[in-house]
Image (cartoon, rainbow, N blue to C red; front, side, top):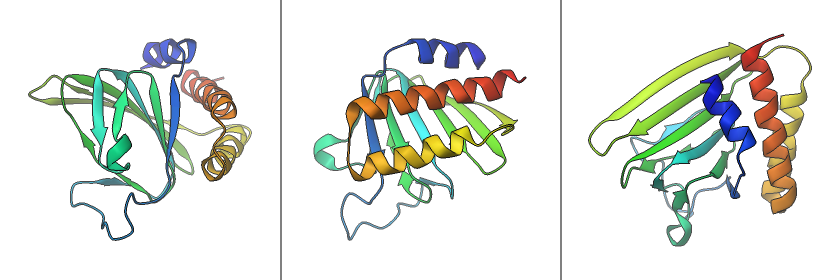
Length: 159
C-alpha cells in the first residue's frame, strides 16, 4: 500500500473532479452505490471506468484522474475493462485505504486503516477541497490533492 501511494504522489495528477451533488435532481441512490458519511478520494491507478454518480456526458474516469467525493454523497463505479483504483476514506479518527483491481472477471480488494494522528492538517485540506468544488480551480485543486496525499502518506508511515 505504501509503495502505491508513494508512486502516485510522485506521479502527475491529470484531473480533479468533484462529486458533490446528484447528476440529476430526480435520481435516487442506487441500491449498490457506495455511500459513507465522510469524504473520500477515488483515484484511477490503471485503466478506466465509468462513474454513475457523475453526469452522463462526463462519466468516464481514466488513468491519473481523481474524484473527490464529499461526505454523504454516493458513487457507483462501472468497471468497463481491467482497471485499478485507490480509495482513501477520511473518517473522523481513521484513514481508510482500499485498492480495488478489476481483471475483467473478478474484483480483488485490499484494505488498510490507520489512525489519524497529529495536527488537523488533513481536515483543513478537505475543507479547501469542499470550497474548490463550489468554485472550481484546477491548479489549486491539484496542489491541495497533492498535499492531502502527502499528509496521508505521513499518517500511513507513522512518526
